[in-house]
Image (tube, helix red, strand yellow):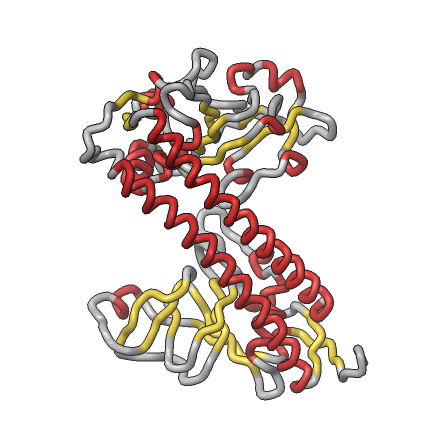
Length: 372
């Protein structure tokens, strides 16, 4: 019993049926219809066939996103890198999907080049199975929270799009430069103490009281937190004094995820960066740091910078190519007006972000309560 409910500890493999997808790329190409087909990132397209006539759970078993859980509708299919999980009659599909999400199936991956997980490994995962009525109650609560999380993320995305649209309205595409703004290379716009250089090559083992070091993982799709940064020795950091942060820099990724950006403030002064990040300080009488960030984040220019990267197993942006990136330099007052608009939008984003974080913490706590 748990909270007055009947509880049974079960193995995943005992409460569901697995079926693999045998759909190949050729089955999807040049095929149009009304039935959706899904991949690791979600909906792909509509085709003229379906493999499952009831709702099901899809698990990414190969490649990027391995272990991801997606609940899919009736009369749909998934591509061959995924497998179907069909709950048995005494199991609510939403409850099972949340239970599987809590299992973090990605931990079972094998393979260096293409990650893969096997049902025979993760089917042994155990969880507490409530009676069907309580399963539905739990699923209802978690679905409500998940819907709110999705709405908050959508709000953040729309606010981002608002700023990007405002940038284009005021300045046009920075690559095509239809408004004829003056242009300069990035190396002409940075301060004298900014050499546009790679960071620390080998940071060594994490040090309890060392110098915090930024890596791409610390800024890609997240707000950096100083206490969460890996730390290196002061000796190693001092060998790369040119990339020690002074506070108020734009960081740009130059390995793997190319041209992701983040502005850091004075609270990060004294930190350093790893090989995959370059810190930028600008002459703000010519180009404001935030304006630089939004310009580099604009799709056309960002795509162009990504295209400069070289490498097969390790994609990397060379410093000379980065230094020579051409930027528009509108009058400083126009830059300031745009940055002020962006800052006001950021205030709205911050409130939404706080709400999102609270919801995610609540969901995490409830997942722990219901599934252990």
